[in-house]
Length: 342
Image (tube, rainbow, N blue to C red; front, side):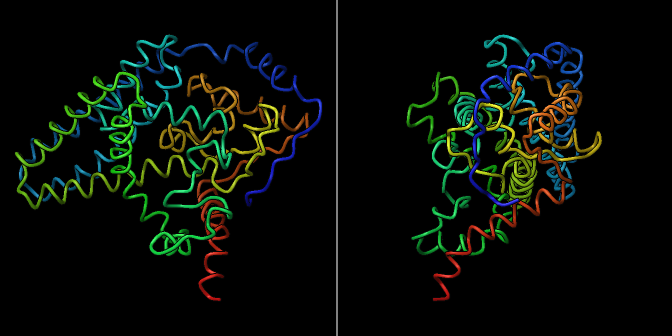
């Protein structure tokens, strides 16, 4: 599906209210403490186990296998941080922020406060050309208008962005760190002193471990493999969700703004775990505070309701979701390629 303008339906102000009533009647907004206790324990064990293996193996090229494992562990920590940010784990703000900073700042080296601000704006206006920071014209371009007039390296990337998408994801881990530092310097993050201190703790501990345990060349190789694969994995959890879906005008009601801009990914328990529940993107955007474990349960309710009121509901396989996103990137870059050939 290519990006098109979403057309609002008249007199639909109560559509979400009715869906919300049905969902709450099933108790699906209730907290799942046992689920999150188990998930946080498993992810913490995964992260701790990776670092234990790192120190036990010591100065060896075999530690590059640990780098691969820790890339997956870091991404899972990031996905837990996502749930904490939406208060799916704890009902109140304080414990959510405390554990969120532990996961984000200390765990993976990313400002939790910066990410929260960015992600909140995304949820408020998904795929909006001007209001969603996730589709803002930066390295990659998601709207054709933004591709016009680019020069130099940016123009080259735009012309070939579909082919460069996955290679560029290797830089996502570094970009998260750089963006966090920029936000702290700009003063746009609440409690910047605390967030900065936690980022320093992460950086010192991480780099000290690498360069004290490994040889310099091994340390650099570990850093490159770890951060590159972390970026690819994390990017692959978000890429299927909105890329290539319609871009709203801003006149849509809440339900259509969230459903029409989102794409679900079919799959079993493996996809659920690998994508952290983000494969139920439609349901997550409609009910961002719903525990991840309940998204699979609410999915048939939402799909049935969308069919009832005539709202398209996009769902596809994992590979096809990437294919659609890449196809959209290729189409957006067409004017840049045409200008180059002229």
